[in-house]
Length: 118
Image (cartoon, rainbow, N blue to C red; front, top):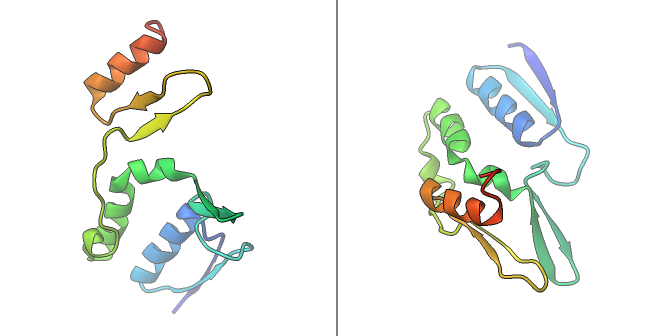
């Protein structure tokens, strides 16, 4: 069995390691940080928890494909529920900006900010 070394346990490194192991390789995964996840991580400070890099969660097909490659049901491991709005931005002194997962509604919101850029 061939040995494969994967450096970095971020989303890409984890994905590569899982795929290679499924294909029968002896995979060794190394990460310099205390926890895996790379951009998909948390910062905990003063009783607060901040998610860093949550935008990739808005693309569940990435996770689903890897689980399916391994002949597993992704819903058994990461149950997901669609939320709307998917993002709320709050700026001091301004009304919150709500970004919908519905493209038509999202376009309308973007047009209120800048019709040209929408």
